[in-house]
Amino acid sequence: MPSVIRQTPLDTATQHHAHDFHQIVIGLQGRAEFEIEGLGGAISALSGCIVPANHVHYYMGQGENRQLILDLPANAPSLTGYHHELSRLFDAPRFFALDKPLKHYLDFLLLEQASGQASLNTAQSDRLAATFLGCLHARLGGETPQPSMRRLDLVKLDHFIDSHLSSPITVADLAAQACLSEAHFRSRFREQTGLSPWQYVRRRRLEAARQLLAESRMPLSQIALHTGFAHQSALSHAFRSAYGCPPSQLRRAQPDSATALASNRLQHTT
Picture 1 (spheres, helix red, strand yellow):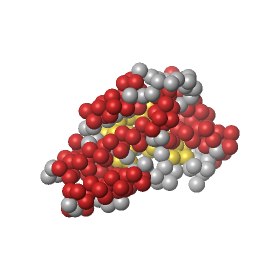
Picture 2 (cartoon, rainbow, N blue to C red):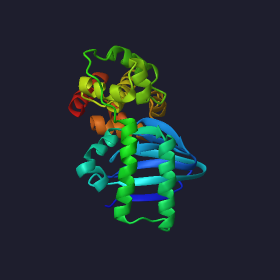
Picture 3 (tube, rainbow, N blue to C red):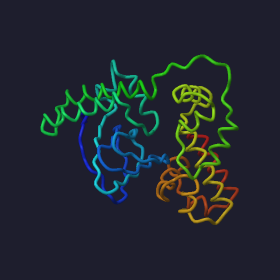
Picture 4 (cartoon, rainbow, N blue to C red):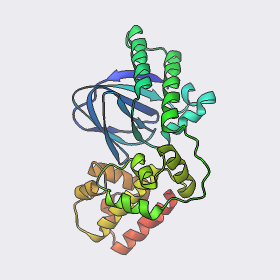
């Protein structure tokens, strides 16, 4: 599949899917809600989100809306060869805002698209995408962290995450707890835990949901909202990915067996 740059409105009813290519979504008009594997947020004009390949994402446009979408296969020229470092943008989902230079580049990209009668050939799409991704990478992941022996306080971070499970949690939120820049925190966190911040937060959400399943009769829909999943189906999908079974199966099992099963599966997926 070649790289594709396109414009489209999003359905005002909640939809969800996953695909085997990466995606950048940038708001041009109106507002849209996204939830990407448990990470929730909104985009409006001149802000956007990163959707890594094979990540289930829920989305819903609000009123009159229009988005610019970059569909990027993993083997696209804009993500391979000389540009291979840009693929790190898709290590985890995240939300971003365009600064002034990127806004100007977006205007240029839209003019290029308009001059091609709303479609661009593959080579031109790859060149335009590579430039945009390079600029975005410089802003979101381009800092070189300075060496430091100080380890992150995971107990403090765990407390913050557990206290905000029902709300969106961003890397910026976690970095602020450690008094680090977002890029420095992201690098240090992966070195110390072997996980991206997004993977770690997702694991804490799943552990909290598993505990509620074992210790309460709270409906699955409430457990999903309490632990930061936008929908019951999002929680169910995350459970199947992590534990190999839906939440209802863990709830039907004996509490001890359910906990042992979930813990065993989690160890093999992290």
